[in-house]
Structures are given as structure tokens and as C-alpha cells.
Amino acid sequence: DTGVSQDPRHKITKRGQNVTFRCDPISEHNRLYWYRQTLGQGPEFLTYFQNEAQLEKSRLLSDRFSAERPKGSFSTLEIQRTEQGDSAMYLCASSLGGGLDGYTFGSGTRLTVV
Amino acid sequence: DQQVKQNSPSLSVQEGRISILNCDYTNSMFDYFLWYKKYPAEGPTFLISISSIKDKNEDGRFTVFLNKSAKHLSLHIVPSQPGDSAVYFCAASVDNFNKFYFGSGTKLNVKP
Image 1 (cartoon, rainbow over the protein chains, first blue to last red):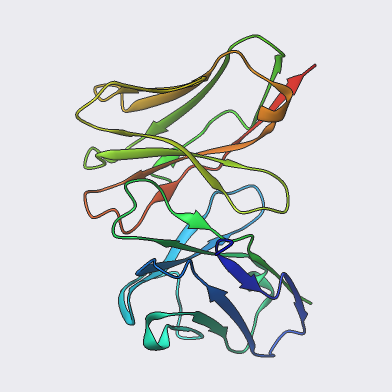
Image 2: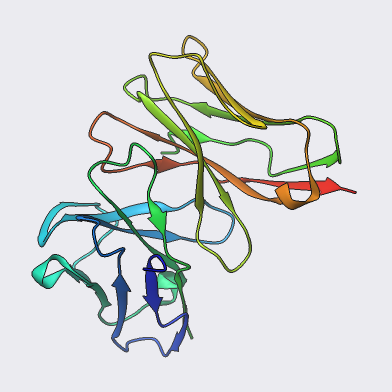
């Protein structure tokens, strides 16, 4: 297992289009997190799964955002009707249990909305 | 509301000297703190952590200090090496460890 994988690495989309990102966590990790990072800022929490259950969502996650983790394995993050303000790096992370030893982050998906 | 702040966007240090990166927080409920390092085009990598019951944690060249009364933590790197050049984020959590609040990062440049 080589770590947390995110796909695609880069996505350019037109405003109003829907986009979907995928995250494959480390296989034995039961917790999966999505964060968003904009230029010059640190990562901001979006949502968190324990196995297949989505246990917490940030208010940053508007109705246009939805995340799933079917079967407690990979996760998808979908953004509907994208806006220019959605342009950011979307980071996925996973951990076994709580984040006492930190998360393992993927390399992220950079979204550009034009 | 920025609950974790890194007020120095950048820091330049000579190789072999000490690098000190600072972080302030506002939420007194935070009881667990981490530092991450990030290279370009990669995700953040966990570096070192500290619980609020301690005031110091050391791991090789890296030491994190926590001053709870001042709501301040710092990361010391000694001696600094060119490979340490990266963006460093501090992060804090309340006891559920499920959500971390990150600072905006400090870009460290270690000059050979």
C-alpha cells in the first residue's frame, strides 16, 4: 500500500458543471477526511467518515457538495454547479482510529473553475 | 474565525542554525497539537505532535514547545538542513481528534 491516492490530480471545469473526485485511503484505515485548501491558507475541514458513516460535516460544505464512502473503502466528493469560489486544492486524508499520530494525506486534487 | 494563526508567512535560516516556527491559537479547548510539513505538489506530512498535558516533545532534530497560558506553540528545528525547506502548518484539535484546525502556514527556506 503506497498511501492515500487521489484522482484526478488536476481538474479544470467550466462554471456550472459538476465534478467528482475520488480518494482511495490506506486500506486498513477506518477514518477518512476531506479538507479544502485555498491559496495562502491552511487546510480547512470539510467532512469525516468512520467506515461508511459520515459523522461530521462542516458548514463550508454547502448543499452543492456531497461526499460518500460506500462500503467504507474509497470515497467520492462531488461538487454540483461549480462556482469560481470552489477553485481550491481538495485534500483527502485517512487514519486508523483517531488522529493521534496525524493523518496521512493524499497529494490532493487541484480544481480550477473557469 | 481563524482559531489557529501563524503570523509569519516566511522564514529564512542558514543551514546549521536553529529554525523557530511559531503558532498561536485562541480556543482554550484545544488539547492536541500537531505540526505538518508540506512540499510542493505533495500533501502535508505529519511531523510531530504534543498533548496539552505536556509542555515539550522532542523527536530528533525537531522539538515542539507548548505554552498553554500564552496559547502559543513553537517548532524548533536544529540544526536546520536544506531539505527542511518546506511549508510548515500547525494544527490543533479538541479531544475527538476528528477535526483539526490548521494555521495558514510558514514557508521555511534553509539556505546552504
